[in-house]
Length: 441
Image (cartoon, rainbow, N blue to C red; front, side, top):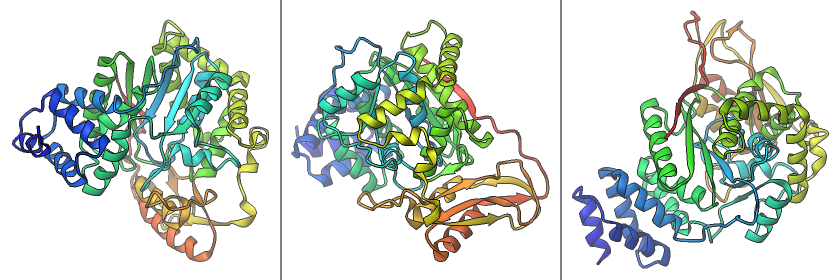
């Protein structure tokens, strides 16, 4: 079998056999497939698609291209959560300790941000000293000690995905659903999970802006998870405005610690509510509670009692971070070294639309994110969003506050954020429904 034979078959629209898919994945992992041959097959898949059998075979081949972790020596069910990403999406920092405090082991393999979205690993590094580059032995030790551990993908876990993701980015084939499913699920299934809760976002701040496409992706992810023996559900959620108030790494961690402390701002309610719902589904899917309602009650108790905060404190200390942020979240912020710029509404009226991705790009563009993986992040840069869809504003009222380093950054990002908000004459925006749909087996 030759690479060009596999490329030709998919180019012509034929379904690839398991043998052909495994040949492709092994060739990418070993280097026998050149980058241009792999890129050609990715483009053929982008144009021609894959059926469910091909999609599952590709996922399993990528999963088994590296190590599948075994945590059978930890006598707890294992569950995780994955989000497709959005602006201000910081729920993992609440969900992981909350689920762990409810008796679920959470081996969370997370990613970094790129483009308009922030990554969980980058947010964690806003905590002074926090280490996300762990060996597998360290990861296992922290998981046993704290009930959850958080690290990035290693060379041992789904190595085929590491190579293919870089090629997808370079060849504009990121958006194709079979490749998204295989990328996400190969990494998640490598963590040896019993259950998985998915947050698939749609709207102006999501990668899948169209709801129909996001729904298609959610169904595909759930189908693959369940077919591989992992109890999987997905929530289709709104991303037409920033989730909560904070956008930017230190600001987002600060918002999460306040939630864990029971001291959060009313504007952070969507983060709290979505975190509780996703955690409850992890707890129920993992079999810790017999019903979703019982799981919600358990999760709410763990949050209210401070158990989740203490779990987060143990993890921060175990991964080298400063645990004092749990007692004094303000330690995360260096406001004295920043300029606080009020971003004002240009007119009176009602907020009728928010281009959430533009807010993410504005923050990223002045150092609060990265456009290339090698870029350094200024963790203190960010935006606190005050105006929400449907709010009535007067001219000069605050859309939010931008935290930046100088006047130039303030003008550059402030203008872009102001333009992201549409303020109209009529309040015709329907109430935001955060959870649009639940997708189960």
